[in-house]
Structure formats: C-alpha cells, structure tokens
Length: 202
Image (cartoon, rainbow, N blue to C red; front, side):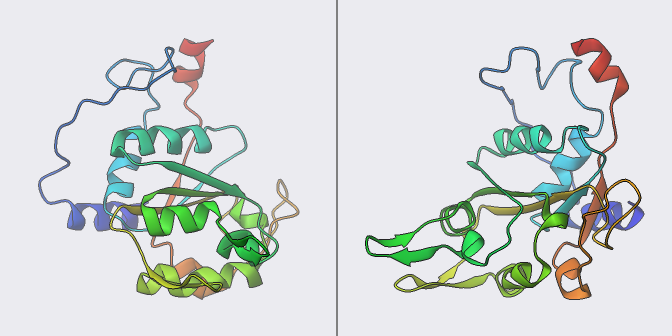
C-alpha cells in the first residue's frame, strides 16, 4: 500500500479536479453523502493515474460495486468479465458472422473501465495474452480485426481474493501467476470491509 501511495502521489501532483458525481438508480448511495466506502476516494485516485490496478480482498467486501462507482465517477462505460479459461474469452473470436467482441475488446478499443473479476482463479496461461496489450498499449486481436491501439480512456482493473501467489487456506482454488503478469498491475490495493457503511445501509 505504501508503494501504491507513492505512485499515486507522483502521478497526481495537485490532486484530482473537482467534479460532481451522481449515481443513477442507486438511491441508497450518494457520492457526496455519508454512505460511501471509506476507501473510495483513494481508489478513485489510484485508477485515475491510468496505472493498472489489482484490487484484492475478502469475498463480499464490495470490489465489483466499487468499480462500478469508479467508472461512474470517471464518466466511462463499465465492462466486466470473470474467470477466463480460454484465450478467446478475452480476445474474442471469429465465426461465420464475423468477429465476436468481448468486454475487453470494447474497453480497450472504445474506452471504458474493464473489470476482470476473479482474476486469480483464471488460467495463468490465458492471462499471458494480456501482457503485451497492458505493457505496450497495443493488442493483436483475431482476424479480421488485427492490431489496435488502446483507447485513451481505457482503464484496466483486476480483482481477486488473493495476491496472485496461489492457493490459500481460505481460497484453495486460486492460481499462482508469474512475475510478468504481476508486473502489469503496478498498484496492488487491498479493499477492506467497511463495517460502518454496512451498518448504515442495514
């Protein structure tokens, strides 16, 4: 977390510009009110640096909902995928009707926040397909698409229950990932339970 804060401080010298954020159709949560997760502002700043973020925490701590709120605050589309075991689940595929787009393709080429949930239970071999796009800002999608540059408003967020080091006592089915994949996510941030928020909502 100290390393993450250092990167954030370097990327944002004068803080984020002020903006009014409204959550549509979520009346219980108000960005400007008290019913906000206490880590929201810090995580929003981290994502705003455009560094790839890996958000880890226990089940039910609010990772997916938090990223929906972050996308809303950044005014970009929210895209989601979970547990990918085949490369086409990320990169798309071609059938008789043409290229089939995936959430990753849409976010990468058109802009948006891409949330890769349950990343630590996905296939490490398949995730290696993300190495080049996340490092170089270019991705070679299946024909007839070919090479595309990352959109300026592309944000990549990985989510999981572990630190990508493999199974734990609580999460025995998680995979171990090599350094190349971990390096693509320079900001590892733990999302903790917000007991006060949960109590207020309840």
